[in-house]
Image (tube, rainbow, N blue to C red):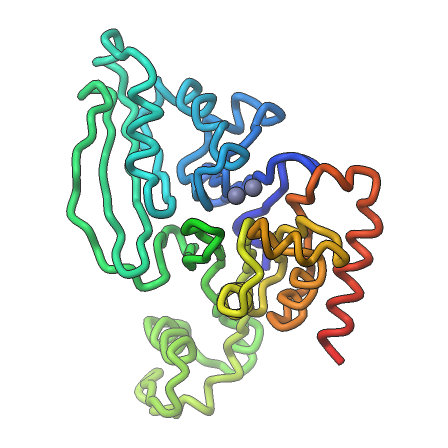
Length: 324
Ligand SMILES: [Zn+2]
Ligand SMILES: [Zn+2]
């Protein structure tokens, strides 16, 4: 099955971590963190519909102004999801400019602030001079966005402050094997959708009537082809605490690609603890425990600028060791 999205890191691993995701179906895009985005084209920025911010340290949020400027004249809203304080932070960014000439601009910014047990919401609209308009809060149960068969899940981590990590995944696809359908002489009809639903919900028994004949679920199950959807996870700037590591493993479980920081070398583990970042040992351990297919490391301290291979090998080694 062709995946419905593809993802790329915008910068090299020593620069600000920014993950750009293009959705094929809707022709729009999402982004995880918005630090330095100077290498993105205007076209790429203008496609952004959803931005997920881990936290508002400057290396993760300084690109917001560029995005704002590129989208001012756009009719489609911009959704921003971020941790505790994001509504205030977006409000302050907007208040840093004068907006007396933009009342006819269509841009609407919808902000969701993910707290440990609820999601606060507010809107900032050009027509209102970007003053804050509060919207009702909703409970937080990990899932923060669902659209066009895609889901984004968030987790709250500790980094001295609250930080979010995210997973984006496609629904499992259930397709019908048409050749087998023909071979068995079964005529297509609404029962095919019922069959897909039954397989998706993993129920054990169900009956289907096809051309006045009754079939059991088990007789028809082999007509379906199940394809697991793609999953990516983005985790950066988390303290190497046991609680954080367990949460990271759960969030990244079985991901196809885990984008994750490896801020420090293994030998600098104490520094990692003091500075609330992961070192390569933690990164490898999380990747192994979460059974991810690929790990892409990002957000490496620039002091190791010539040492990418060493860091990457340390992550691989830590992964192997954790698997023993
Ligand atoms: Zn950072
Ligand atoms: Zn940070």
